[in-house]
Structure formats: C-alpha cells, structure tokens
Length: 252
Image (cartoon, rainbow, N blue to C red; front, side):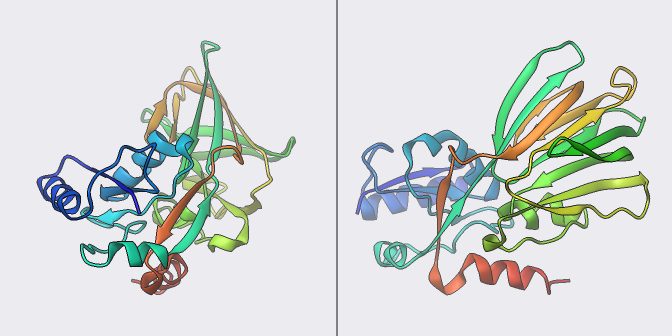
C-alpha cells in the first residue's frame, strides 16, 4: 500500500511524519493509495480542500488538540488498520455568495458555512428554504449550516443538533439569536437549498465563512450540498465515527 504523509507545521507533527516516512516510505499524492494528514482537525480539513480532486481516501492521525475527525497515533500495523477501517463518505456544502458591491464568490465547506456579524450591530437575516421564505427576520450574531460530520464542531458549540452520519440531514443553527429568542434552528434534508439575505448590509455588515475561507460585507448567500466534491475519510474500526458522535452526545 502506498501512502502520502503530510503534516502541520507543529514540531510534534513534523517529527511524526518523518518517522512514518522512514517506516513506510513516501509517495507523491497522485501515486498514493491513501493520503495521511498528521495534525489536528483543522489540518485535515485543509488537506481535504487541497487534495479532494485526487479522489483518494484520507486517514488522519491526531497530533492536534481535539482530533475529532482524526485517528490515534499508530506507527505499527498501519496498513492493516487502514485495510479494516470504516469508510465514511463526506458531502461538502457548496456556498455561493454576493457582497454589497455585487462581487460573487464560491467555496465549499466540509464542516459548516457560517454567517457572522462584523461589528457591534446585530445581523438581520432572512432565510429562504427551497425558494420559500421561512424566517422573515432573524436578529442574531450569526447563523450556520452544518454537515453531519461538522455537526459536532461549531454547530454543537452554538447549541445545534448533532446529526448522525447516515441521516442525510443538514443542521441550520442560529448563533446567539436575539429575535426570535426561542428559535433553536432546524434539521433539513441534504437536498435542501438554503438562501440567506442580509438586511442593511452597509450598516449591519456581515461575513460568511466556508470552513477557513472568509468573505466580508455579504448581502446574499446560497448553500446546498455538493455531490461533485465528495471525499472519503477512514476511521479505525475500533474507534468509529458513529461511536465518536454517540459519545459526544453524552459528554459534559
């Protein structure tokens, strides 16, 4: 089995990469069977963006702080672990946005797309679901759309629902909603198209972020699932993604 090892810039991750390469060799990404990012969840997300077009599976090894999407360090029997790993297909979100100057932007997100106020002024956002207005005005710090894999990240911190991987659902979650104060968001089919419209964007300036790509002074955002940029992530069968999500729901 051919591996491509890549690491974050931390001293520990860089040293680990050298040790893995010494034991298993190193192939370029195009020739490899598996891409192995060594670092934290953020570095895995960056690797998904960088190498998604190669259509290779990813097996992340945790040298970060949380490592929810990563696997434990395993220099012994790596090939056997990967051959028996759980394979999870991730469908990212496709984000299209327009700013208050008419410029347009596109990006994808494997975790979430989030809108966030840029100043002391609360954002005022209306929400359309499949072309129908469902929320005339949400006054808030922001709002996000999360994939199932990303539902335990920012979405969970914003008190959004954890979404099982096989549910084919997206989580729509407000961030510090002021009005309507009691609205806690919605679970939507992954086939849903979600449109956000920012009111008074010149005064209530709002940004949108798709994973690590941020665009500012936004007026309109469209979010939908992307079937063209799917990626496969591998998880040690002894610590599957389903088990991680289940444990997270009982963790305090």
